[in-house]
Length: 166
Length: 419
Image 1 (cartoon, rainbow over the protein chains, first blue to last red):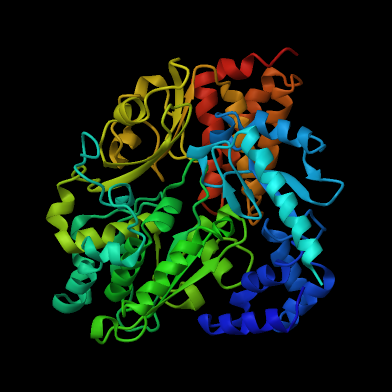
Image 2 (image 1 turned 180 degrees about the vertical axis):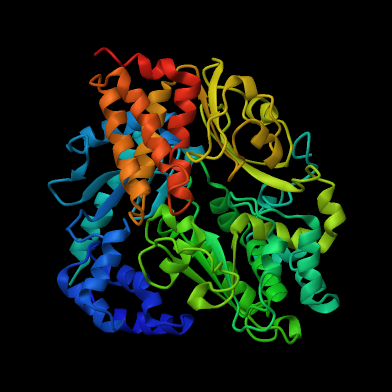
């Protein structure tokens, strides 16, 4: 989403850089913040804000893995199954988690659009495997019990947010 | 006593001093004394000279002497930039995350010292996008530094002024390569640039730029404070000083351990790491994540410095040691690493883009039981076509997992060949 609020945030950042273009990743993060992905309007807004073409912004989005052009769940679980984590049981943990969430082994989004599960490569927490990031918050030394608690808490938080919204 | 080789932590001081991420605690334990010394009794050239004499070698992986890098900055071209490489993404490496999250002021002090030495007024910390929340304590520490007159205009009431800005990447391993990082910081796809020109001549915004790793800069305050002779008391003649070793995989106690360079690998694995979880013998050790050739058992007595590792036909790199016990199928491990490099290849040059694609295809064919004995040699042939033909180190390093595992553990591949 791109509103006056995002525009103001972006303008605060621009003096840090010599070119407007340098702020493209920061602007895309702002645009993606609310719904976790970028639609055509968001991309056009970022392009306009930075005097870039839409094609140019697409090339940047396509290059970096943290930008998304498809809807996702409210919480994106990025679960590391790279070599160091796999040596400490992360692959088995990941498959069990996928099953618990009713998702196929390659991951995906739950029917209620609450969680998107993805297998990722190293997130620099190898000493505390199994580990994952949920909307980029670290969760380390996971047990299934802890993981269930984390997911329940996030579900409860989301329900609370939706009932308090005007 | 931190361990047999080190009285107390020099880098991971958070392990000895609770709450050192708070500026008052950092200052109470000698924090920013090095900066005060540099700004009041030293000139920029002297700061560079001390780092040069200490022979502090770049801790991001390449091991290039930091002081030499600083001295390449031309004296008469302005502005000069300092860029901090915090794009820590090598599998098995998690030291910079701890330094920035737990001892952030030492990183900041190192950046200010570097900027003073090279005449920069701006520094950018380029962190991987996944570090969004690791940047929270770092951002807080930067704010504290501004509030205490340690950043911004007239630092410590001297003529020296500078700013530090935080910048997040967005998920691309290649941005750890310094010229790809610069392109990314300028808002482009993170693909490497051809060199020359080197960043010291034409870096960020085509201006002279020093790019150093987080750990490298964390070494600078103690070096300036205590002098190069003190620093060179640690480590070896050609690899002096202290290094953080990230230990992961099948060990009982994974984690970051600080040791002088040249400490024995066995000490790290057996004494600090507690040996394998299973109690089974170790089959192989990766010394620099996925990027360096695996160490087979005949070299487990190697010392951990740049030269000794080279003699053992591998590299120290970022010093991220991944330990694998004898239950590990090395063809499986190699497939994991090939998948990593295929995923992270930036696509700029065809030897890396196509080479990694085909390595993964052939690896998958072998591992799914559909390969022939010809396929093992085919893997080697593909690596030969990549070696010395890739645009940057990513593609050059990507062949290491395959070549080393075929060389030392060929039977792990052969057991899949039934056709």
